[in-house]
Length: 125
Image (cartoon, rainbow, N blue to C red; front, side):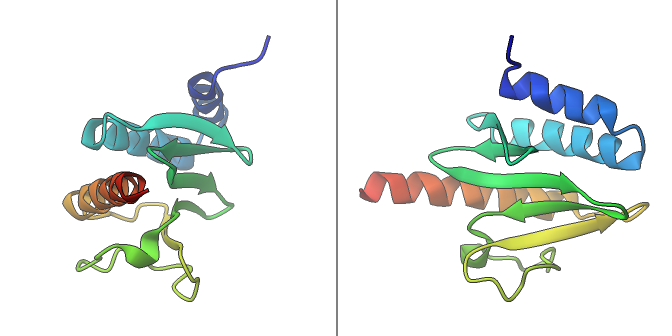
């Protein structure tokens, strides 16, 4: 029997037994609290949170966690959280290394903007 996307994410977090799994688990709580309307999806072997389209995906790498905002180039980032993929046409990413602190209020703001942007674009159609 196939796992639901939320079960896939549970499994992914459980199998990532170091700081990266803990980070993804905490980010998951943050995004679901900040934007309860998002749905969890499992795409490309990574957790993806969507609302009226893809919002943000999270991947793990050897030395960092990546949060990839699908329409990040259209978001205001006054606290300069985006530190990767800055040359991409539409996406922007945040790479977080072990022990690194992130401005949670600014991250919540990016999440909220991303969800609101997808919602506004959907209403225009």
